[in-house]
Image (cartoon, rainbow, N blue to C red; front, top):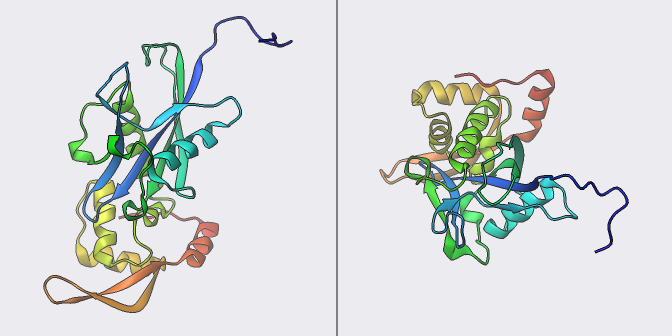
Length: 230
């Protein structure tokens, strides 16, 4: 290979993009993990990710990994941290740029390695390869911060949902329990929801109204300064 004019000869690190992919099963927050088929950490579970190609950005690399594992091209994805500890990868000096993605589990198709990918509830995640336990914890911390300033939780719900589903989602993300009446009143007062003229039947033969996220109202609130407090 012809040597580049400005090619530096001192050692420099490789760069990867790792993606924490969250999904909501209606009760619990889940994370998508892949089983490693090669060393190091062969047979261990890890976050989806890989080395960034020479002709792509970190975001493009993360989106590529996301599409390979879920089949989704337009999912919500956000960069949240860079992990650069010198010995985080036993193979070589590797820096990873970490993203988290929010997907609807029902829309996930799975990629070519779907047999080696699996959803895990957060309270059942096994010990992960590399420093991925730390990356997952950092992703959860960032998600819990961001949900107060941006209605990202709606990315995890169906387009139409019940108020109970929304409450369960916020409880799963924030790891708290809300009073049903207070939660309902706060959400309705914010104006982020549009109540539909549709109902679904519940297992106890009762009915529940369906709602949709109101993007226009949120955009107006964001201009004034939005913060969701409980």
